[in-house]
Image (tube, rainbow, N blue to C red; front, top):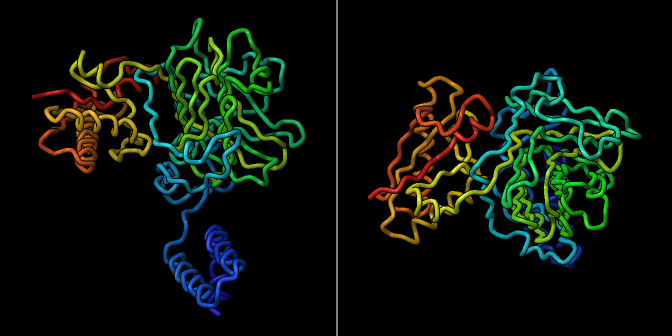
Length: 438
C-alpha cells in the first residue's frame, strides 16, 4: 500500500525524485530481495514523498526568455545559481576513451589567471542587440550564422542563441574582438556562466564549444577533424577536449560555471568544479583567435543556449613566488555575485591554495584586504569591500586557520590597479589581496 501511495505522490510532485527512488526500488525488487527489504524501500520512499511536499525541489529555468526580459524564472537568484555549488559525483555518467571516473572526479584545482585580457558580461550591449564586443567575422566566414542576441534574465544580461530554422540553423559561431597578436600567453584561462538546457534525447545534444583557434587554420578544421584539437565542448550531456571525452547528464536548465585552463599544449576543462576533460596535447599553437559556437546536433524545437560573464585571463606568478617577491598575493579567483559578500564555490581552489601556504608556514600571517571597482557609490563599495574581506578571513578560519593569524580590512575603490573605464580594468580592480605582516 505504501509503495503505491509513494509512487503516486512523488510522480505528482517531483518527476526528478520519482526517477531516483523508484529506480532503486525496482532494482532491489528485481534482484530478488524479500518483502522486508521492499517494505524498507517503500517506507523510505514514503518519507521522501512527504519531505518533497514540505520542501519542493528548486524550480528550473523553464519557459521562453524574450529579448524584452519576459521569462518564467525561479523566485530568487540564489535558487538559480545553486547549481554552481561544487558537487560530488552526482550526475556524472560513463567515461570514454580510457578516462576512469576516479580520474575525472579529481580535486578542483582551477585557479584563474591573474591578469584579465577580456571580460564581457554584456552590460554595455542593449537588450535585443548582437553582443557589441564580439564579431561574426572569423575563420569560418563562409558558414551561415543564426541570430545571437543579448537578453535580460535573473538581473543579468546574457548572450542567447535559439535556432531560427528547425531544419538548417543548428549552430552559431562568433568571436571576441581582441587583437591577440602572434599567440596567446603560454598559460591562460577561460571562464563563463552557462545555462545547460533540458534536451530531448542524445541526438539534440546542446553544447557550448569554446574555440581556441590555431593560426592559419579554419574553424571547421578544428571542429570536425578527427583529432578535435583546439575546441573544448561543454554540454547538457557531455564534455570533450582534444582526444578526451566524458558523457553525463546535466541538462537541468540551471546555471553552471565552466572553466578552462590552458598551459602550452595542455588543456583542462571543468564544470562546476569537476574535471570533465584533460588532454596534454589538446592545443596546437599558436592560438590567435578565441570564439564561441553555440550548437545543437539537430534543429528540432529546443530551449535556448545562454551564457554570460565571459572572461579570458593570463597566468601570472605562482602564489609562493608572489609572496616572496611582492609580500602579497593578489587573488582574482575569489569571486562574489555583484553587490554580495557571499563567496561563490568557484573560489574554493584559490582559497585552498592560500590555506595550504598558511599550513606550510606556521609563522605566516595575512591581512585580508578587499577591493572593488568604481561602479556604485563609495558608501556602498567601502562596506562591501570590508564584508568581503571579512568573509574570506572567515572561510579560512572555518577551514582550520587560527583567527590570530588573520586580520581583514576593505579599501573600496581607493586603490585601483587599472582604469575603471573598461570591463577588463574593472575586473582587475575587483580583487582580494593577502598582505603578509608580522
